[in-house]
Length: 129
Image (cartoon, rainbow, N blue to C red; front, top):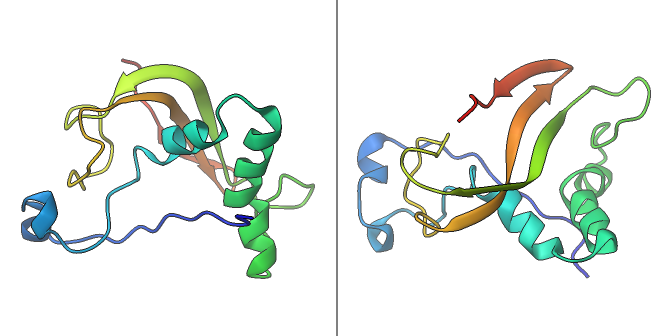
């Protein structure tokens, strides 16, 4: 049973990113596609969606003994506000990340983050398309 799913932000120099995918440093820029891939994983089941959300929020926090991953009173408001039904295509133009060495480029995606809050402050807001 999968208990936790994570993503890692690992910035690289521009010349490290400007190579063919096969020649790049191991890893992939998943910043823009992480949510759509999670929604695909949970597709068709509210129970699966709850399990996937827990796997990226409260479960890793519990495993690492962190006081985060919850919307409980007194906790930091760290969350994403999403549109789970938005259809879009991952491209150089639609990507927020500068890391474009991604096998999902040109792929149709469903679901997109509109806002990210960190400690109750908006740190990302998607510009209307």
